[in-house]
Every structure is written in structure tokens, then in C-alpha cells.
Image 1: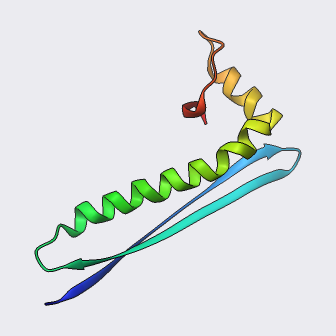
Image 2 (image 1 turned 90 degrees about the vertical axis):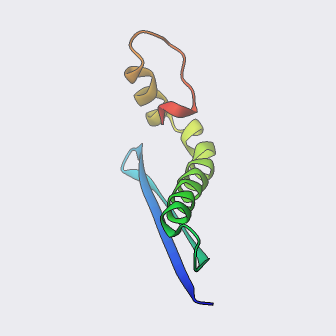
Length: 86
């Protein structure tokens, strides 16, 4: 039985204003056996890494006046701001 290792890295830099930024990243690995869908596993790892970075960033972004103002200005029709705006 042959194993292949798949790795995915995702990182994002968030501007917090006042010359401050938040740089977060996540790397995930998985072993793929013969017959398994390596592309599907890669996509799964990517979405997991992206969700982990977003979850880690949310407390800081919610406290950032710059990000709140940015999210509100992008919502011209509605004043509602939610996590998907970041």
C-alpha cells in the first residue's frame, strides 16, 4: 500500500489601521492512500485551513475600529455587519 502526503497552507494578512496588521496562517497535512481522492482531500484541507484562520481572526477584527468601519462602508444598502463581511 502506497501513501502520499498532501499538505495545504493558507495565510491571510488583515489591515487593522494605524500601521498595524494581523498576519495569520494555518498548515494542514494528510496521508492519502491508494484509491482515495487526493484532490478532494486537498480541497477539504484548504477549506479547513481557511476556516481556522477566519475563526482565529474574528475576535481581533471585531475589536478593530478600522475593520468595523470598512465593513460598514461596504454595506451601502444595509447597516447590518456580520462575520461574512470580513
